Image (cartoon, rainbow, N blue to C red):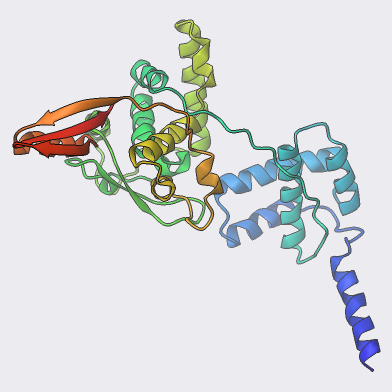
Length: 316
């Protein structure tokens, strides 16, 4: 009796893990609705739809084995193959089916954090309000989509304290804008007559990325500085992560909190840290309470004090 039960269970398991032969024509609308119900971000849904349309155009998308063969033979990097497999997996899940999803190991290249001089040059030479968006990226280290969620009420215009809503199912966090960003933000609020409930940048992360690439490439051409093209929008986030790492004395958890990463998995955080980057420190000497308060506002680090004089160091 037990042998028969074990046999039945094995057969059932094999049947559940076996790829279906034909899932029928893919209904993109149904997949999109299923993803929305499962709380996927709009940017993720858009990317999945793009990959599924590519699959539908180039192979028999009704048959999982044909899709696997197409992906495996496609001449592209493992990361793209992974995206295609993940997109088709959403179709399988939406239908309540199972399949053996192919595994492609994405090769991750460690990028260096850009020099602050390059970031500042871009910020200082693009038009308003893009310079504000980039200045805020530099100060907060936020994801592009998180910038589009910010409302006027999320920012204290006197201190620069900013309440960020975390993307990718992460918790919210606090950031702080520097004085330059605050002044630019006040200018935008006054120009657009924004109230506390208004979105500061009513756009999408895709539009923001396109706006940045266009302005950066044009600036690189006009100023004959091709190295500017190497600075990606996410490099502003990488700059913040690297800066936080060095200023905090190598505290990775502090970097994770700043960037809105989950603390139980720091692999993503490490990708935003350039351990070889050099931080230039400027010595600051304070003798009054006002000078000390200003040093704290400027993210200065206390070095010591002697005979009523407080010594700080400030990241350049």
